[in-house]
Length: 280
Ligand code: G1P
Image (cartoon, rainbow, N blue to C red; front, side, top):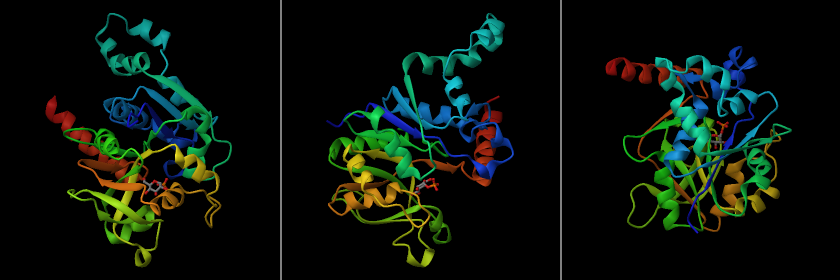
């Protein structure tokens, strides 16, 4: 108990905010410098000790699968050149991790995407990373920070949170809770609402795309009703568990870029580019 071996990446969305580029390229393959978002996400899972990656995908997103497979022709063409090292990181990932894929047949929300992965997840708790939310940290990765908290609370689901301006709460799941004893960054969640109007939001503590979910979530998702847009929300399923004290919200150390928006994506590229230029 307390060990997290699997990470789930819900990557079936169409990324319509980024059209036209996402017509033929999955949004998770958009690069921050020369590395696609999905690779940053997988590297974060690895940094938290996870080697088993499960993607909830759709039939237009084979590029993600291909990215984590060896490419014999390219490898042959750059062998014994200075470019050989450029594939080292991703090749190391393919060697040390296993990948499994399941198709989400209908776009019925994040809760539905997570439920779709049930046959591949097994019986243990698991991590979820939304690759749109690119997180960086000077010390432990955000997922590793969350796993450390989960180990002390193995009956609970953990969600990552961050303060956002009040005017932006309607883009997020928002929580209300009380600080855990002896903690200044972990809350026992009492209430959570998906994308509330600012006037109805219980706080400005927004859920960011990192979760540790206990296996119990599948039972709850099965009976979670769709929202007014016909989507099954993970926030609503988690609320059922919050009612019995089984959800903790964790205000993580680190920086988050909202790469699901064009603005956040440009910002991430600009911050990473500045750092790269300084090191050249
Ligand atoms: C999803 C979740 C939301 C969360 C957000 C984080 O929303 O439903 O609760 O705050 O991710 O990025 P989405 O951005 O997929 O609409």
